[in-house]
Image 1 (cartoon, rainbow, N blue to C red):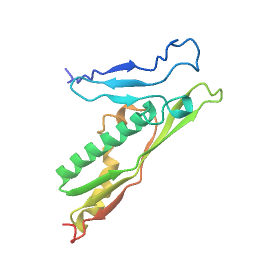
Image 2: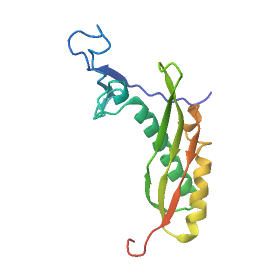
Image 3: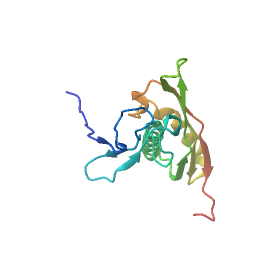
Length: 162
């Protein structure tokens, strides 16, 4: 029997401004994403869809999930391959394409741009190559139907920073 892991969250709408959903323009898109023992995530719709720009939207959270999963698996693969990563930062970019009617859309691509710093110059080629192995094991990447591209850069720790 296969192992399974479950993830229980709650989404609570906090955007009822009085009349509920009596009209498309009169209700807020604000909500909270909740999980036991964790602080709430203040969320809303994308500002293009009447959401609050100060709150996370589902599209951003999906791109963040892809980037997080990639990073966590990448660090694991580096650790098992003997590549010592001392810093990791990603500036991920997601694209949502609307359909012709404008009534729906989908994420059509995520580009990960991880900037990795390794401890030794001899590790740079392996560090760069390991990004290509993540897709086969990353839970999120294996679950989505859009392409995920990687544009990594690998740097070596300066002796002054060590």
